[in-house]
Length: 87
Image (cartoon, rainbow, N blue to C red; front, side, top):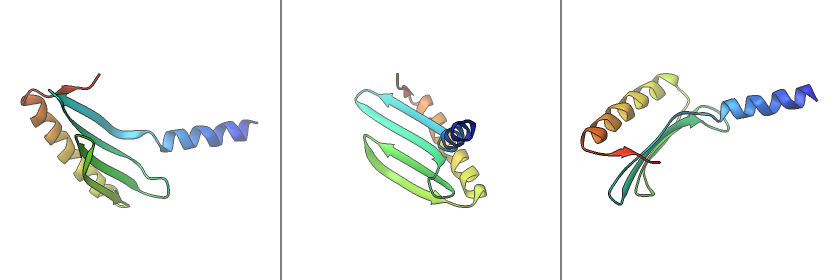
């Protein structure tokens, strides 16, 4: 019983997003996420109005860090332009 619980908990932690942000302005949305990939590594994706603009799979943590910095910079710029967190 305890082993089953621990297995479920570890799967839940592995699927927690590192970054998950959706911004909206008027009728438009922009989403950014970075999360653990099912097999190995991480998946990073950017969407604009439900259209995937970019999707990458990384196995190198350094690449994930670079993408996180780039997404954070882009999110900050969008907020300065009046975009707000989706509710």
